[in-house]
Image (cartoon, rainbow, N blue to C red; front, side):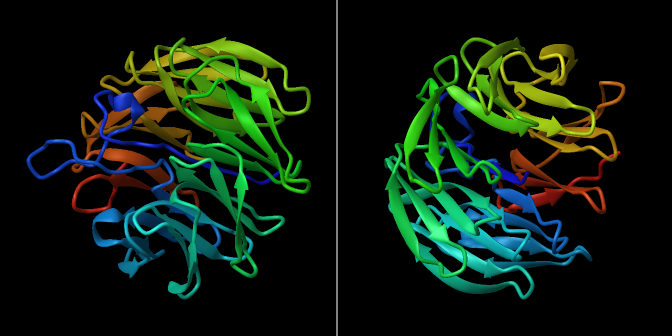
Length: 351
């Protein structure tokens, strides 16, 4: 099953949980958007892509470490890669468009208008479709990957998108909702699946189960994709981002308010361990082959490196520019961090 997900809306808000906004030179907050898909690794090309909102571009890091910048449009915020076709899609929030990039040549192929200000982006690689949410809009933009023709479907607003290509379903998550919106790709029918609580944040999938974090009540909902029955799993306070280690059958929930990461055994449906990382962690990425988890804290300007076998922090790395998202190059095990500083990304020297 091929699934893709993204989404992490961020504005000028007082609580860092709702997402760190872009910061001005004097340290004061300024309006802006960030997204957990602001940096991405492509297994097909071996390249890493990071949005560069300041310059209206995407930074492209090649397999040899050399980087280039490609102009894509104003305010790029999120990226998706179709590993089947090699095309890269960039949501440009500033000019209401999606840039289509050739992943082999790094050329801009097209710029496709969206319904409003695009934010989250995800793909159905089987049907070659691109789904884009629009901030402060109830329209979902759907692009045909072959023709770049876009249509808009009224689904309600969404802060994250997950595509289940096997079932031809698109799951839309909204922070202010207590349910997931489900779009049937074939019939265009829209339905809802109760998620168990208000203020939904992270979404991930393992097997036939969707995991959705409940910010306000320190739990994660485990939702069966066939029956839509939900089980509640206790975590730390204010769980946000999620990551999956399919090899170990584990789900990791980053707990913003109590400086920890909850380790969930997916087979048993319970939290089996808690790893203290300090600060206010907000993003996570897994390197299953190396048994590592990387947890970013924008406020502290740090990334904690966790040994997932021993479930302990190996090291805390300082990162300039407020790290907010991570990407792991699975073939080389290099780790890249998207930042809100003048440089769009940093490569970690990770143990």
